[in-house]
Image (cartoon, rainbow, N blue to C red; front, side):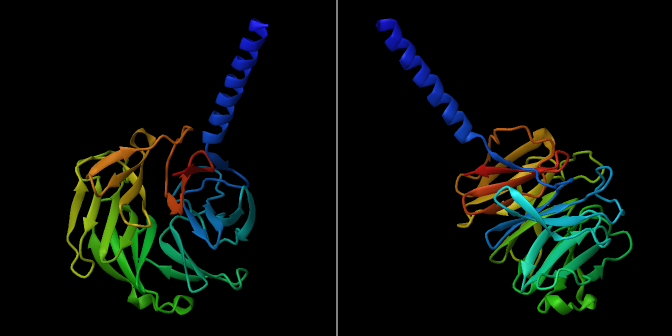
Length: 292
């Protein structure tokens, strides 16, 4: 009788433990993904850019890139592989237009007619690793990692962009992920040659109208994506050194690392939506969803 009771208690405890482990395991998106570097939550869906290339090459020019739209764990093709995208990176939506950073250019799709050819905004020669973007009013700021350039672009009318409005803004070594809150800009630094230096950190520009970049903290890494919490108290980041996902707390001015619950080979352009953090695993061709 006692043995039977003990076995019952033990079985219940093990079952409860397994259920708690299952509950804590992050959801993972994989459907139709082929090398995803960036994601963007939009209207309750999640947009996922995929290279579709034969090999992982963020500067490929194969023209096989596409964008998926996820509802829960199931995807549909939103932007097909039409030859205009090769390595889609940072994305955002403005006035029914989807803006996508790609190799040497910005592609702008009208979401009301995704079959229509996109507008293309070409960047100057040598500005290849067009990477991420953030809005400040009607001004778009776009990073280019291989040169460290950040450009400004007037997107008051995103369906008819004046390409002549593309202007150099400021230079930050290895400019990669970018986030803006109020008049303050944050920029992640990633070494394009893969060799981390003291310059590779996360930078802050306190006043967008008078850009002076200073390090937010002195912690060299290979920083990729940035995302601010809704209240502005935390700046989430990814770092390819030790495959880190973490955040900087503006209150205690400390870096805190998160445990994703799964190994992430290459944490790329993360995005935050409510209490969910979406982290693309670029070489793993998947997106890991972390509950916060």
